[in-house]
Length: 232
Image: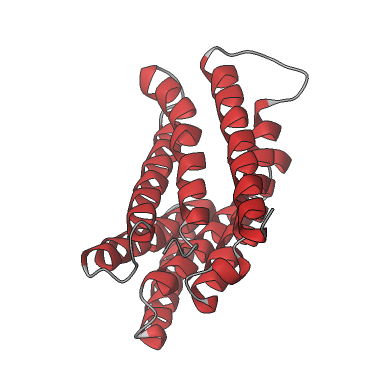
């Protein structure tokens, strides 16, 4: 058996396990089923497998720089999920980590004008922080998590826009550019669901958003992990 065939089989097995976990935890969430292992742990396990998929890329990557940015992004995503999903604490740090992920993906989709992009992110973050301290001291006390949420939203929208541009100008070959665009759109839908979940404390929209977060999130991560491969 050749190395390429062996790798494809391993990838197929990993994707099958992820699909099984996806169906399993979505069933638990939709029907509010308790099991010997929690839905959150199944979700985190699926994200570990997603990261492992990216590690199998190696010499089959489109290019080293693209793969490195992708793998670092997926690793930081995994750490962020650890804080927000498993430990259920350090929310500001978790959102900050996801902001870093989106910044890395922005670099991945458009590496030119890197200094300008970094400067813009720093200016936005400092402006939001200064606004927070002024409002917090002079107007009303605010939780810093709101500032991090706004900063993350900016980072996310920035990377989604750059993913659209990368698709439009065919920066990536097929099917990679389709995976990136669909993956980032699903990422956006996931975070819209997260926002709805935190705004609505009960009711239909709250229930829908609580399930739709991971409905969109895991497929987005799988597509992004696979987008680093050279399929030609």
